[in-house]
Image (cartoon, rainbow, N blue to C red; front, top):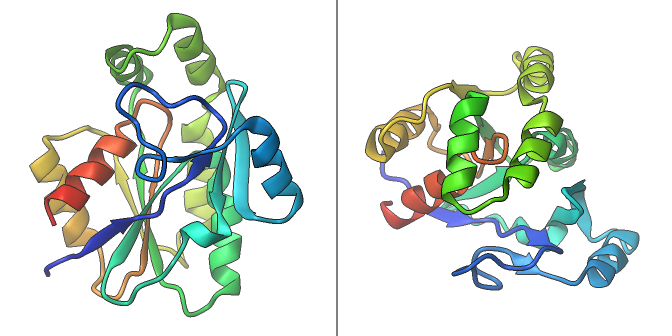
Length: 193
């Protein structure tokens, strides 16, 4: 199975990190502009995380039958996206859930330059295992969900995900807490497809 991937780029009100580019890593908006777009119904889902807003705009999901759109999602946004997808019955999606231990998350966030205060807030607020277990149980009969508990070598991880993806999948959700490597996995899959 040869896969062609593209990225669904999400929107944030936070400042870009070193090396991030508008329209490539995120769509960067001011907080006021972001809130205006929310008020106008421009997002499928949005959350506030550590005083910054993050969201998936309706325009970010453009379906192309020749590719699978990769979408990074925080656990809180999964339900909203699932409901949106259900309303668009012609959209087939699958989910990869990264259930990574807090110790590994902390190491990953330190390596990318997050402050200890920010890391502690994120880990404290991230009750992803409990929430995702409820979601997995709730949707296990209607969704294909691949759970990954170990951050394997990227080639191995990509192969595992590609073995899981069905040929006609249009949207692949990659869900996990901050520091779980969602961006790294997404970028590796895009650059090596």
